[in-house]
Length: 331
Ligand SMILES: Cc1cc2nc3c(=O)[nH]c(=O)nc-3n(C[C@H](O)[C@H](O)[C@H](O)COP(=O)(O)OP(=O)(O)OC[C@H]3O[C@@H](n4cnc5c(N)ncnc54)[C@H](O)[C@@H]3O)c2cc1C
Image (tube, rainbow, N blue to C red; front, side, top):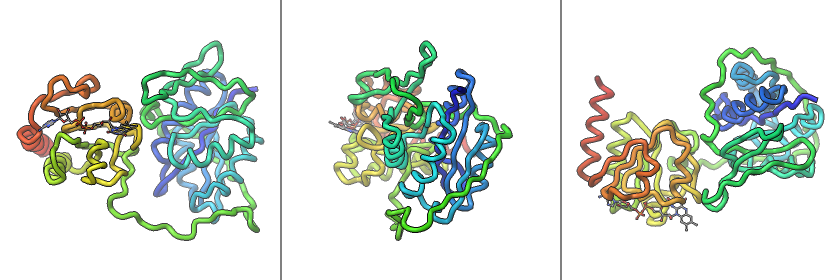
């Protein structure tokens, strides 16, 4: 039997989310290596364009469930759509990005197959025809190589940024297979009644393209706002991140925290100002394409991770750097 790989697609504002495209990119690699197909499933309502986009981006077949009760994610709705599909398709692997939704949904589905989820994977290798995933437990102090000895399907979630989606095609020409689903009666036991906007501070750093993050070295909430704000403005907009002491000091809400107990990020550009580079922070930024560190201590560990390191006092450096960025963007 061919070793197909099925990706459960998350979507937002009519487009697939980046963690799902990263999973699709890996699914294509795995499928190519094992002679299978990269498959995808999209559940939603009015999501035909999402399914088409995924088919163009490299999925060979996209299985699309469109139902008004799938308009918002519920664990029951998605489970009722996806579990029978897995039984029907018999993929070797089921992949998702390591998102909150995946952490809610995938164990629910995998449990019905009596299978584990290998979660938050950062790398994959094929060893003697076995797919082996790498995880980094204990704040990335170890690398664990893991494979699932049980029968297929196997389940895994992928750390954001670990498997870049840059290699996806734009005109793949995969097909979309529309499915009907019966969600009548009380088959969906938990429904979303209302969504409360948590306010402007809600940030999804995991899909930000540029992040400017500040640490305790900025000294105060006012200095943080002033200096980080200058860089954000000079860049023409960027998400704001923080180390844990910044959040503990209530300079920013927790959803800005990057690291092992915050968000894992994978922007094209991460700028860290006054951040020492403790391992718990660094594990959250390793997926960044370019890391710029500004720190007055030339021996700060963040410089071991940085693509570009600038040694000096943030208060003197940041205004000059912000001005240089602004001028470069205008020219
Ligand atoms: C279980 C656990 C989970 C954790 N989870 C996280 C997490 O998710 N995220 C996280 O970030 N941390 C986390 N931490 C905390 C982590 O260990 C560090 O304490 C924290 O990351 C340090 O934050 P910092 O770099 O802002 O502060 P510091 O370590 O105090 O570093 C401040 C840096 O600023 C520099 N500096 C000072 N003044 C200036 C200046 N004027 N200009 C330029 N540079 C200056 C200093 O040289 C120093 O390097 C966790 C810890 C534990 C135990």
